[in-house]
Image (cartoon, rainbow, N blue to C red; front, side, top):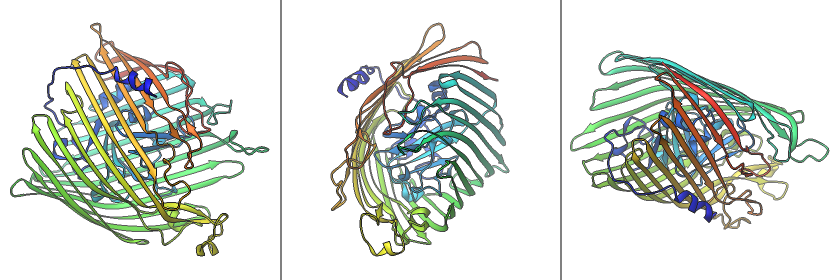
Length: 613
């Protein structure tokens, strides 16, 4: 592991400081657009230029550039892909697409499957690290990610081909004017793949279609109407547990995933008052074609919501909001539904140097009742570009419909809860000539939901749940720090590096695994990149991803070894319309494991062309 740390650290050298004038606009802090300077919470934004620079349709290629993030994938591209932030499981991270909450109401833990995403339809990715349940409610314990779909003033497209016979095609078109904007983007991915089972030889393929659209019309100077929608459809081949050994191996299993989401809304903005009201819907369907265990799982969530902000005297502002959600799921023979209503308020002071906010939220759930959440944060500008910050945030995750209402459900299950403390310091912004940032945090979680097996224990609820049930028992801690550095030596030469350390611990009293690290949570993670545009216009890049050791199971008996992956990229713009590009992933053909028993990709090369008009 330490040789990998040295290799990544060698990406850094010194440069002269300078600050960019343009600030990122973010929405994860309050639910409404604001400057990144007006929040004390750590937020990272990756824009379209960087997404295209990374290349490829696989969203994990973008994800690995974000501090504090990990992902697990059970097989080739298209297999279930889950996001972890700061050691939190996927269900404790909220994912938004164009402001729509897309966490799946039908899954056991309520997470979002990143396999639905394709880079060709994404304009930007914004990640808030740490809790923000005051604004967003359930799931926002580890972090909040907002993905914005592509907006185009004109037309663009790309196609690439490479390893595993993978074809990735994208197209986008749109129009932007003072009063009206509309855009439509789509992508197609088809891959022969590789074996989902590490021991297998049969290739498991994948095919996916993505379509996204958004529109906005300004009725008056203060009132606008908006709409957005997204559709994803994929089919992935999987492996299973075939007879006679019933161990994980090659098998003829497929899963189809169909998901769509949308929002219609209105924005009223006078400058001193902003109101953003909308109706959202999210629908997900999975069909599993497993000869021994076919399944169909459906989930739907509908929501009406309001976000508002009013300017107050003396550089104060009040953010507020409320929502009501109806959700349901079906996983034969199980089905159920629930509803939740909430209100929140966030009072902030936005001075020239000091930014400070404090807020409170109340949720009323049809099954577990009421839940209060509090959060506060502050930052201070010491000198131009140099800022210190501190935050305290409470987070919660409501029990899922499956944990409450399935044949294994328990109507007495309560929300998971957390308390997070963090401090940080930063200089400049990502993309400046010099950007440096450091953050330290601790998250203590309680009421974690686990499964009680009635085959190995006894409890009163076993009388009606003979196989077992979900219950609140767990406690856990995650603590660590994140270091970021970005240096732009010249307009044509830059480097970025991110180091994340996350120490997780099971702190459940009496648990046989007390004191162990949580499964699939590596302590050390490094991402580094160097980009250089030569005098001839050829752009060259190198990416390095280093992941430390992790345990594959809760008992900490199966180790996932550390690994380092390197990618080489190149692109050349022939003219304003045509750009050719290519890359080699996993250049030294590293054999590595993300999840025990599942295969990963070896060395693969890709080449493509991008068109703009």
